[in-house]
Length: 396
Image (cartoon, rainbow, N blue to C red; front, side, top):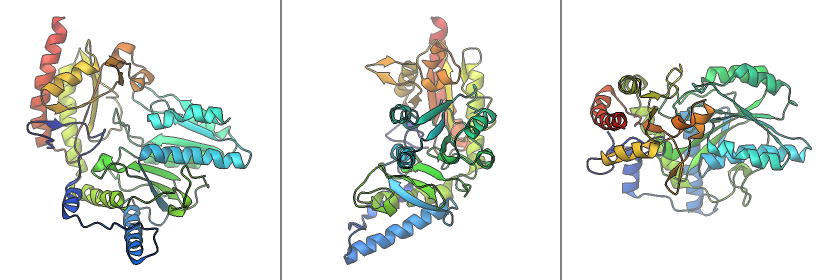
């Protein structure tokens, strides 16, 4: 159970995660290499050696040390932009245009690339999903096969940040073998939230992560690049660091915190325990909301072990958040706000929900070490809030 302050509970892990125990210990020891790893003096060489070692260990965590390279950046938004814009630029140099395929419920860092690609004459293809967040892979495959070979990049979200659905990686391999497309996988929400999160298929071109999602420092992310991947132009030019993938002084502290947090995950995450815990909560929330709300994508066969996204009829997401906030719980809302005005959640709209439902989304996302005993404790507090919310909703 994660308490940020006295009597408060944190249920917003998909937004960001508290620092892992190993990272906290390391920061308290204050034994840091301060030198720039690009410097050629002795301290710089020591920092470079540590950087190489940490990079190799991170690759090994995911089983990709033989097939992939890694470059570090500020986080997943930069990593995604680097791959997509970099590939489009490389194709431009050859007189070709990128065909970029993505889902209507992908992260904003993906969705917001369409205006950029349109402006430069590239082709951005948005694919719809059903109510459970599943892509029509047969439709996607047929569209990809109509494009010029070597120009297709598909973005796939491994674990969805709002609804917690999972894209099975075995289907990813089949899609690649059938189409020959290049594939980028948004892995931001996968560490410590799915079975075999640390065992990624070696044949995929790109995987992108953001380290603060699993207990490392903010401002650091990383992308695995297959050694056989197509070339792409860097998003950030300068000194040519990191094999030219991303220039700029390398964030060695962020990288070390990433390795330490991954080590904690390997040691502490128990898929079966976490699955039992989230199922315990999901079943009780489903029963509580019967006839007056719903869990989103509840019928999906593929779910992670920490996320429940639901709506309550007649209640907007901000009022729901406030009810939980007053009860000492930090949760996530499914809608964006501007000047206090709720807007319909785009993910819910693209899943086929009504505007009213899209105004009433609330996300609970729990720690990686969720268990049934923790879930039972949490449920007592969650139920008390839902009872008040539902009572007030019925009295209107």
